[in-house]
Length: 65
Image 1 (cartoon, one colour):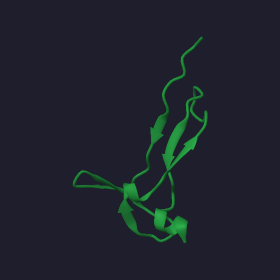
Image 2: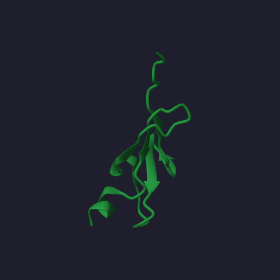
Image 3: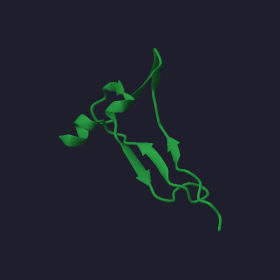
């Protein structure tokens, strides 16, 4: 039986400053550290059936409003 590969992590960023990743929220327009965005898992969305983990597009503040 073939072993399933680990999940693929795809992170979208807009800037890298002093070793920190930043992303602009398309809703509020603010540039925030990447840790202000949650992660989503897309089951079996990779080319070989792997899970793909991506960051949310909206920041946590905008998603909770």
